[in-house]
Amino acid sequence: MKRSARSCLLEIAGYFLRLGATGFGGPVALCGLMERDLVERRGWFDKTQMRDMIAVCQTMPGPLAVQVGIFVGYIRCGFWGAWVGGWALILPASVMVTALAAAYVRLNGLPWLAAVVYGVNPAVIALILHSWWRLVRLGMEDRFQYAVGTVALAATFALPGLLAALFVSAGLLGVGWYALQSRRHDPNARLFELASPLLIATLAGYFLVTGALTFGGGLAIVPLMEKGLVQQGHWLNESDFLAAVAVGMLTPGPVMTAATFAGYLVAGVWGAAICTIAIYLPSFVLVLFAAPPLLRRRDSVLVQGFVKGAYAAAVGSILAAAILLGRRAIGDWVTACIAAASLGALVRFKLGNPFVVALAAIVGWLAFQALQPAWVLSR
Image (cartoon, rainbow, N blue to C red; front, side):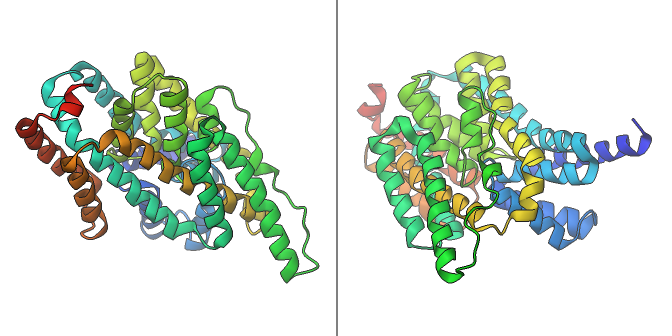
């Protein structure tokens, strides 16, 4: 390898390792940090280039920030730069989450942990609802999307085994709807353009499928994982699953590291490693093979239609997951108050996720000691 190529890869690795270890706030915040660092401070790209990369990654399923990191590495250093950039961003959070999962397994069953979880679980529901509302404001643009989201909400309860098919069907429905809308506004518009890159997925296993269908950002993993790991596979109970979601949202880096936590609980260190690789692998495939043509066709009516339809389905399913998990987390007036106060702190006072969860843990621990809630002790 030439010196210049090695230097380029080391530069990419150093930047994304630091970002992965310190970047809190979810995909939008991480993309904002990348734009600030790589455009304004380092001058690797201009604003138009950076925003084009972000826009292309928004049209594909998978974790937005990771895909932007992969794309940055690809544009900057070629094929190997994509792999180095993506895994450097993923690795710090994955190591942290694996360590936290090991601690969770070792401490599980201790009375003080049950007391902390009593307060943390309703706060996690508030975090999910807050993130869901941000997704609604960010990407729900018309009545069609709200209709698809409503159907997805109902279907998540009625047909839990078909959630993956629901996302794809909603995307295809969006292709047809927005193509017809375009046709009405422009009779000469072409109805058949390149939409296949969005459907490219060479998948094997549950987490590969899940990683390929997280339209709407990393939080869209919640309903897919809840159905597969809790309701269908019975590999995790609802309390363990809520812990996985909480850790994914509270650690730096991508939210989808919840899969790392879940994998550790199911199969130890190897489970964590395999689930981490599987959940992110579709993102590398999509960025390397679908992003270049999508960069040229990102304004396509069919591409945008698929994304809007699948996005709306993800929004509806995320709300359904919050309701289902809320039944487990909120069992009395104290947990209801913790959930409401946490949501108010996030929306009204803009407090950070770790601070809100820390306060909820303290309140929950104190309330648990005083009340000894029977519905928790009986589990």
